Image (cartoon, rainbow, N blue to C red; front, side, top):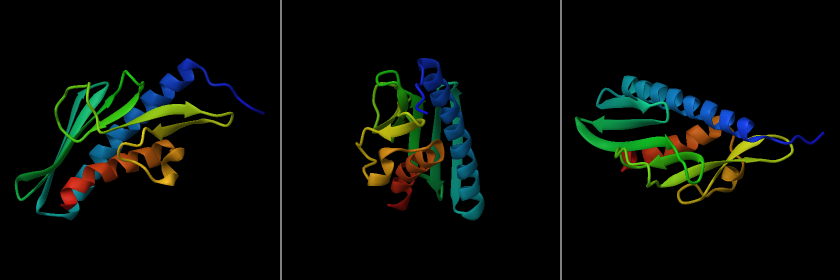
Length: 138
């Protein structure tokens, strides 16, 4: 039977996913630093709606990002800078719904593959993690 999702359903989904992203990034940073002695990691929670992450190799910053709840559009934004400005981003995930459930859809600035059309929270966090690691791999 089809279901209709309300604004409160969308807001809760967004907030719960954001908290999942924060835990995912913090845990992944710690794990990466433990596995690679030449890598140091930093996770910083700014407030209830934003955090930053950074990776250093041999003391030199190689990757950083700022992830925050966006206002226009109302989703979760990714910036490849630690700047805490919330008016610029490299990608944003928007909450969407069909009759079966809520999911995330990227606007497609940096996440373009076909699998990104309907992301669940785990896949959405992994997509942002991959964006973050691009710089580290260079």
